Length: 199
Image 1: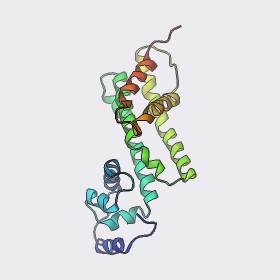
Image 2: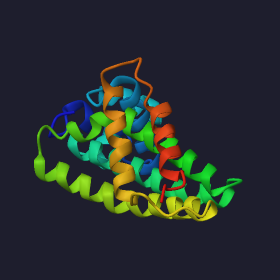
Image 3: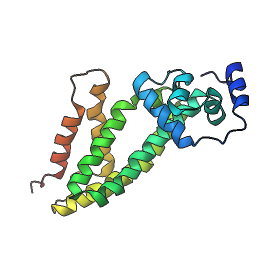
Image 4: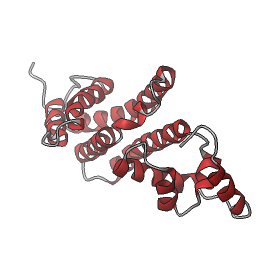
């Protein structure tokens, strides 16, 4: 995607000017799926096809690739954050909710690791995304962790920030080694976090 709209995108946009605007949610879901399958440099046409829209529709919502990447990243963080309370309400136990959420978080980290890097070294943008990530997900993890620890009457060994940081560190190897089972290691880590503390 270039910084400015291409001639093709302008003509496509003109053809679709009379149509109702598609939901950004649909576009972001499609972009996330395409990024996962083909990487963040996937052609805009591929995203448009997945979303069932014209290329111009993508450009109207997200004029640059960086804007699209940031929007997808935020969309995925929100989905992960929203899942926490839902899992806590629907799961049989608080521990099951925590483990299910952690599995989603691992999937997010392992499959979306290229998103922040797609800002092409924009440190300010990357820092802002990291701050957003921490502010949205640490409280969710904290609520799940508190509920799971309360159910087994165990004092927390570490806080939610360090739990997420530990999970993140355990996921690093998955980016370069197909045999590395981050999800298994993370669940073992959760077992340790929930284990009764030795006094």
